[in-house]
Length: 83
Image (cartoon, rainbow, N blue to C red; front, side, top):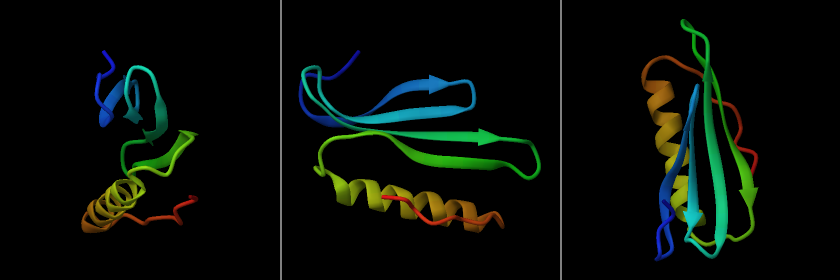
């Protein structure tokens, strides 16, 4: 269920990742999707599915950095963030 107040929330779990969104029931600001493939090594993408507003852009950039740090901590490689 989408929230009443604007916030960042888990919108959907997919078979190989998840989609997070920002907004509320009436207004969608953006959606980002994390998808993972493979066992060892695991490859993945973290991409914008929908992007309408720059509200909470700092949160997104911090999330991308935290995800990159987690990937690097286990010996993974990180590509350039497209936004």
